[in-house]
Amino acid sequence: MTKSVIEILSAEEMRRTITRLASQIIEKAGDLQHLALLGIHTRGVPLAENIAKQIEILEGVAVPVGALDITFYRDDLDQIRVRTPSKTDIPFDVNGKNLVLIDDVIYKGRTIRAALNAVNDYGRPEVIRLAVLVDRGHRQLPIQPDFTGKKLPTAKEEKVKVYFQDLDGHDAVELIK
Image (cartoon, rainbow, N blue to C red):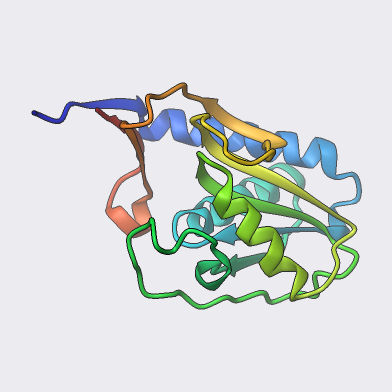
């Protein structure tokens, strides 16, 4: 069977989507001095960095950004491909923060459940919200994003691949059938 690849978001569409996500986060955040972004490795990290840059452009406020590895918090390690854990780097105190967890794609919800458990080991934010670039449905857990770039109904056998310039040499979102 031949794979077919469909571009869902071009680089320009990704830029606009990230700008919209940043605007929505600003609107909901209230006092930006308490806002912090926490990207989930791997592609949630460059997404969080891009959103933070856009918030700074729009509001003139530098929002702290951290990186969270959730490998050892997963309950499905036997079902996913093994990868080398990345470094968690949270350069701010999470206690009392208006924390936005950021990931590229939400699917079953297990990554976010693991991220919530991991965050609890670092402190207690005032509130935790979730921002994703793509929501592809098929949840196994009652987890929904607060901020969504694009809803993309998919079949379970399809894949969504997100590319970032810093990691992949270009920006795009593709659906692989």
